[in-house]
Amino acid sequence: MSELMTSGLIDEILAEHREDWSCGDDEGWAGYRNHAQRVFLFARELTAPGVEVDERIAIAAAFHDIAALRTVDYLDLDLEPMRAWLAAYGRPEWYREIALAMTLHHRIRPYRGEAAWLVEGIRRADWIECSAGLLRSGLSRDLVRRTQRALPMRKFAIDSGIKIVRHALTHPGNPLPFWRSGPTLRRIAQVEP
Image (cartoon, rainbow, N blue to C red; front, top):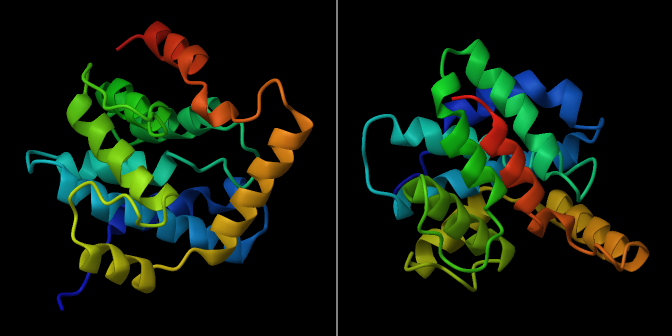
């Protein structure tokens, strides 16, 4: 079996943001790091290679659920640290496509719009994660299982599930805010390229 090639860029991004977003939960943060790496590995397999493709996938994977340790209403919260990071590292022109991928990563149906190559890679990869590997988007069962074993995310997954159930019970009018992408998409459209 070949070794899984995780992203050093994800580790760099998360190291920079740990203090602000980990909520002091080291084990949960380690699980989130592994979730981001798993999304990266799956999305990379699902996306055609190209110039700076891996870098864009890594940035989207690193930031796509970064506020999940705080809240289940995180779509907007995830975007600002990503935008600031892109500006600081000279990639502000990537904001829109990465923001779309992050905002639409829970979409159920395939996406065919702007930046579909990235949105679909991240979306399908995250569904592999959300389904615990039952949905594999054509990836081999062996790859999914090896990735799950090599990159455990137990506490992050359990805590996220508990937060989702708690929120759904206490907010029946808005049980799954991370699926409501419309308001966030409207805000993305207002950002100057």
